[in-house]
Image (tube, rainbow, N blue to C red; front, side, top):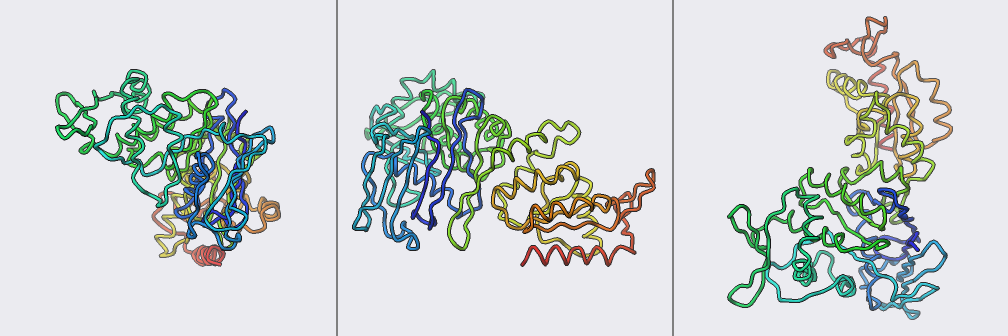
Length: 456
């Protein structure tokens, strides 16, 4: 029985109760994936800490600095399954730093969550130990200091070496060619990893953080079982984009039968395949009232996915579009890629600017606007401005009524640039070199209106 949600109250910026709904594996690739995005300092790593706290053997202590005063200086973390049972971690009745577990049909002993922190560097020299997966999980406790060194992983290395063939098979899916590696003992009695790159040797003290990070992530996967639960904070750290792509594909394979939560700043870890198969995307936002979790709703996912197979505009949900998940706010939507290119050229020529960020290469046509706007609305974006061509201005009234907090405008022409073959006059000539002077005032007013809205 899968976990279906976690609720967090009072931990760091979570001043009121927030809920994260979780992807549930059903055999389809990506179905068990939950991806958490959001700006820096918006509460993503706090969710990781909540999972680690509720899954550790002994109830943790929460320092005064970790507890939210607005929430009454108490912490409550509730992990639920889809049959209604749950395990709750709560601050002691008398308050202070101490907590206790409260079981409601879900035994603490049955909660096994492997949590992997964002800082995955570990001591290059270690002692000998053979931890199995359960021992590794049971040893993981919420660190008193965020970002402390990840020393517990070293106790897994001898176990990994004993199962090197299975481990390397999974590792090769990310690295391609796996370097020869083994554990070596120094004369002082300490052990270390040794890598052989075609006769060139490096130890774990001289190996790049990217390779060591991949080692720790693959370890969470290679000996996992169906229905296991894994949380990985920022899997992209120290990884080249090509490795990020391969790692994400590996994660998608495993989330067909396992629940995996990742928090990320990388667009390579946004998967439309996952959304199509029931996976989740959530965005954390730090607001005046505290941290909020916004989630892409199922109906919105279905509508957005109709754009995935748009063969005429494959870039609508491409990498540039996925970057939108990681922006703070102030997004500008336009109809297509010509609008992105020529509006920017036009503004440069007249010495003006829009104080927002264009969404990818446009929405792939005015009729797709409501789908993209709904996606951004679900994810908690507060400032969205949409610019239509004049011949699509008829769409504005309905959209403004549906999304009253967003801003919709149109340019005074039917296209951003001249289209002589269609007898269309634009704001700029076909080659993007000369502005149609009679529209300069209208363009400057459009900029003033949009910038006024975005800065309000």
